[in-house]
Length: 395
Image (cartoon, rainbow, N blue to C red; front, side):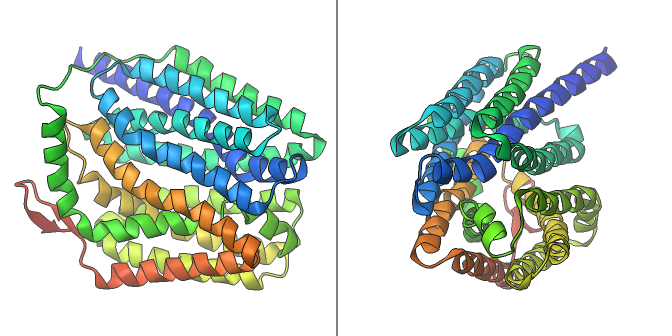
């Protein structure tokens, strides 16, 4: 009976991972490729407005996490999942039919509100006995979708925004169809109150204070690039949409291939070492983009960035997981993800503002400098994880 239950749980997790894959393909395509191009070409909006729309998307994504986490600890995850999908699709549709900036921004916000709880459902469904493999599966799925979404759009967008939207809608519908068959047993309502939950989480947050600056800065560094990346690739690097897709594919493939071995090595040699090396290499690779003169140089730098990100992600995730209370997974991941989301909220807004005030190159330089600062921060700051007894133990 136990083995049958394990098989059913595994099948449920795989189905949930597929839902995440389809929805994240749509979101990555929408945020990275569709939104900047559509807003500029069809609506004639500025880069700063695009940056605002992306920032609002991540503000909504971050703001809903704590509420969604609290609800996941008390309501049926299936209900939360389908309400989230409904909100996300409403945002996608509103963004496409918009003819005013506020409609585009509202649609972007709705998509953020809808996609965010899906992540928490996935993280809350991870089994303690399979933490490593299932967490690796989630992030591998996410990386694959992050690369596939913009690539799919870049190959289709030249044929019209209408065709691109219906492609995204079809992919979204496929993910929703998979979600229809997903269900897990409703979790019992915890015996402790919301105030008691927050008190327990507060202890975890106090222990992780050394990690907070890095949590915000690293997501801000990545967020800076979101509103300007397609334009930078086209104008500064001279890449067509197809060549830009090849660069994204290169980075995504290298990241995916390196993710598992980098995770094993970080467990063996220590997370701090991989955080310092990874962020240092990310800073070097980002700065190198300023001097790339052809497609092959851009692909080589994309490979460096992909390998560096693969070094950072498992080490960072391992540290984060120690601060999630096992009996409050939804709330725990919601709070930690909200802290990380602060950087994602401000990054695109600042990136779009810098590009409008100066140019896209200044935004890339700023991102590279932030990554270098993060590497130095982790080099000098002692990283710690809570011990089983509730104290602190070196990580």
